[in-house]
Image (cartoon, rainbow, N blue to C red; front, top):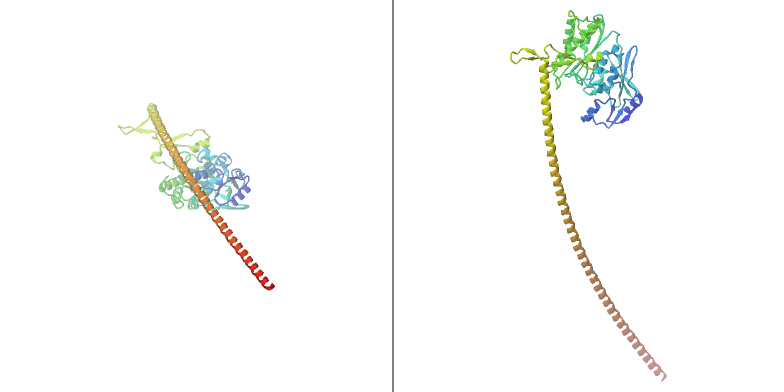
Length: 481
């Protein structure tokens, strides 16, 4: 892992990194992908301390650093008046531990169609600044994502900042999402809307939806239809019907396409109603006049199994209360049916206490049973371990005996081999001695024969000399005579 200390250093580290290197800021998605073996990075570049977490508000734009966390966005008070939708999305993102780590740049680069902070930025017409070394370019957020988890960025590109064009001071910004629990959810449907109005006439509007397509999508057809229109109930219903042209929800594990479409349409109608209330100078979280658009009490009704209770998360954020308030979704949410008459009967405190005591008793019994089972399992495991240990010791003893036998056999074989080798060596020595004796005898015989031959030769020579002397004497005598 390499840690960048500045934006320029981070950009150059990413540009010169080898293939397979990943950028990490908060790591909320990356670490989960590594754990699930979706990613296997060869290296990491940490940009958390590269100084890219500033939030600057100018006369024309709001510039947010890529490593700005959701917690920093939610605690930046001026953001509520300039980009309330983004502030609300950041404040309700997952849980505090995730908000402390998750960054806006990471939420965008991850390219999830269910991203929470992307729709508000897209609705405002946000632009992403991408850096490659020293080169910088600006890319519209709407065009950045090409599919689920895919963007037009390359391996040497780095998102450094996000720029939001500044809307009118009295513009209405809104964000809402649906999940089947009150925290740490993946949105089934989300909608963000930014609307600038002249009275009750729409002057400028941006609408972006999440979890209704392969990427976070912009509702262009609805926007074109609303511009220049006076908000009314009929206009709201037409816009809701027209929304089906802009989105393409799917059926998956978390929800069905028809349900997502209906929720998106309800959210759009609810947002238009709140925009109208905001244009009147009233609290957009209230209820509109029945003569005009109405704000739906529950624009995303839950299935019967989940429609018992819901928590007002945004209410807790806005009022800064420490505990969430539980709100019933209907008048008879906590009513039960009488078995005899079938009429609704309200639960009393005594019956609730009895139920809770029964539940506690059953929990205790189950805990005791579980403890007994655990102890039995532990004893059984100990017995099996002891048996296994005994078997291992027996096997080790048998192996030792076998090894001793083998070593004895090997030693005996070595002794016999040594004896045989000694016998062979003795035989070889005896043969050598016999051969030496024979060679000596032959040598002596040869010497004797040589001596005899030399004696014979010498005798012959001497005999020849004597004969030649005799002949010479005879000749000499003959001459004298």
